[in-house]
Image 1 (tube, rainbow, N blue to C red):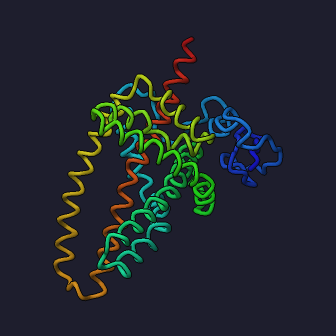
Image 2: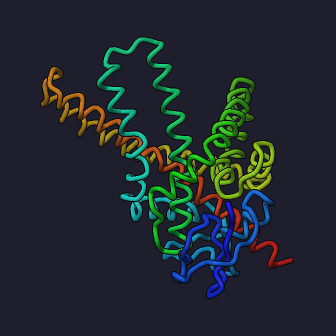
Image 3: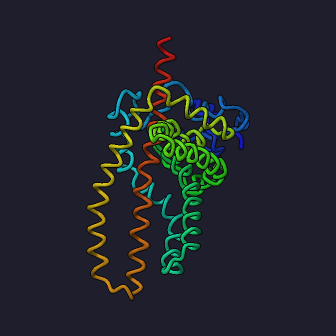
Length: 295
């Protein structure tokens, strides 16, 4: 994939489209392949100075919980339909399959369902991160085909990085709990790094760890608060869903469609943490940029 620089406004597009996402000018000047170096990948996202965060949603340096929690909720609400579209196209077939063919799940089918869900999320996460980053950058949402193209290119890296970081976190939790929590905070931005600054799994993990240095307890506290908020919302929505299901006979097709729809809604709201990881990543980059300016 080739990155192209707009001769009119200077924006560098790493998605290799025909028109500039910022000003609409035809792109014709190729630069370098996006995998050539980390610097080129980062430039492709950042563009000219001051052009990285142009949408009304302000991404601020990571000074505290409010610097990332507010923008996360704002982006999720403002871009809810974009998020829902990215999630539904991938997860809807899985949920329909789940509740039509696997209504009486054995242990084996449950394992298959979990593996399929992990694979679907490995496509959705980078696709969503790309979609939201492009929207924040340009004010215009990319097409679903662009999002899924990025998701499919990154799926291998996401799966490998997710497995390695998950294993480290699991071992840390088994050992003394605290090391696992610290590892979870240290690798919280692995997905945005793997999507927006692609490299080998080792470099992705090390960059996430280095970028979160000095911020891990704040990241952990932010995640805990978001878990509490989402749990409270989940309880309310769960009661509503239970009431709706209670009004429908379990033998009716509508009952299984409702269950699939509820699971699909859970998948959509679960992306709140994907949005948080992206906002934290962008906020940490902003903090790093601010420190460099002060040197």
